Image 1: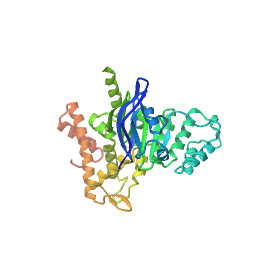
Image 2: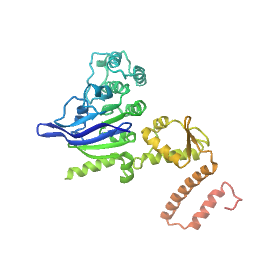
Image 3: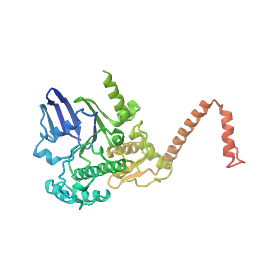
Length: 236
Length: 127
């Protein structure tokens, strides 16, 4: 498998604060990767940079060899952490909207998932609960046959039962040669899905290992390992 | 429901154990075609790459074999399945003996206890 996501010396500065500080990271296609870190560690900043919503202060980020732009938007399916969908639209209008935007959008897939989660296509978005809106957003993101999925807190706002369904949806729908990067702090819920994890703190990558490597060598779940690593960190 | 896996041990190793146990107990009989990697991964609630790695390892040890176009099958080698079964039984015995040692009982006492318990099923036979 080849490297599809590459940061070199990627830095994003907000005033004095480095949200990302000379990050070097390479991720390969065909992998499901967890981007894990405490609040304010730089996870969302990295995903925003990958989507060209903000630009690096220095260094570079490339997806499939390109800097964020038209080519990368075709490759990347992005689930932002915020609700960005227009409230006045109906769910089915949104589905058509996405179909018009992205040639790799699979309408049948979207309708099927809406159906399994009992979301009515005729419902205007503004009538849906916060959690249901998040589900709709995830369905739209996972209905694309993308090369890279960047999912920012995909399960943060939904109940545990829907969490299982969403994780299953991610497993079922990602193309096998795609990269899935999931940012979350609900580690226990996602770790069995992941090939590898990247721990990030204060804008720096601390650890990049496979899940089974962590479990074999530490005899701990990634969740426990995370708690331990970040507890130690605070003492320095 | 995803498989119940221990979060402290490698996922890959636990999948191997689980599939072996399905073969030993006859859930997957000799010669049976296994579900696809994707279906198994979904059933287990794990990453398809991890499932793939576990199946490759099982293939390497000969417990399953693959036919290029039609998928993966359980070995038809009854000897190998019996070996798996014995290995599983040995593990049970190991854990059992460990617990008995913790209790501080000697083997003779334990053996006669086993004889007595098993005797409930078959009184006449000498073990």
